Image 1 (cartoon, rainbow, N blue to C red):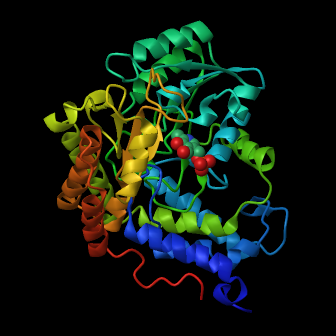
Image 2: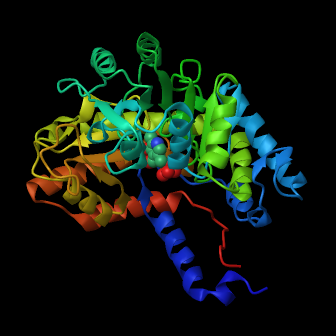
Image 3: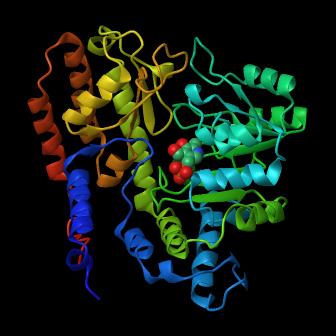
Length: 424
Ligand code: PLP
């Protein structure tokens, strides 16, 4: 019955170190967020002890009366948040949710069509050495080289050429809305299923700040931990029950064994939180922050260094910085922001001349800072710190210490998990 600090001081030390890192830096990885305390509690609970293979009321294990309630609450709340008629909350993560979708809709060898990985797509949308590229005949559409946006004429052309069984709408590194109605039309024209992966923008959809793919798609997958701000995990949704049997059996027993009931309880908490005004306000600040950063990074001093913004702006929670014409590469950009106390990730950009390990892009997101409480004023300061860091690095005048102090002034003002002690 020893607590963590007593039994395992090494791991307790890791938790303390990470909490300190999160408290003292600006977390701007577009796929990260800070979960509410209630989510941490549910996820770190005794529900981790319970096996519950099957679905509520139809389990293959005894003693599921409590966890059944958690799963039913998670399902009902997620249906309410997204206006969905069908939800499965069991996928352990986004990748498992996506594997289940393809398992349900396609046979090995069938053709799938998604956004190319180096144009902003995800590994599970057909990358060569991912299951999606190995099991299925993966084909891809790209963004337009001029606008850097998904061009629906090109998607249609690719669909007519490849005749896919499944068309995938969704992205990991892209800053604009997709035209779900046009995707639906194309899917109907070629007789394909339309699967939307809304992992990145689900929080904005939940708050009504982004078009919903649910009415247009045969199935929608999502992670729960990005803009949605819940526990790390995945989820499937659909407008109705048409594919329910196929999807449920693709998740269990198709992909997974016992569901993680502690995570499912935490998903239920997250879905309750997603119905609050606080959540809606946070999503609005997430969007506002990204637009403020986009505007600052399009200013003349930044432009003069050759740094550009892909698509020239953003409709979502992230911006994509294009370093192809600047003196910096992605790795250098990531490193210099890290030294200033800002955590982001480098990325390739479409038509990138640099190898993926270095890349010519930076992906910068606002969800975690909005959750921390940042509003327009703070995002203006963050935007200026980032712009100054990038411009000064290009002109050889970087003052990392001064930037670090500006970062600390912000993090000091916004306490993160103020009375959390993880090891007791
Ligand atoms: N789908 C998209 C669009 C993503 O961006 C990601 C993760 O970055 C995933 C799926 C995979 O989620 P996970 O990391 O939970 O497996």
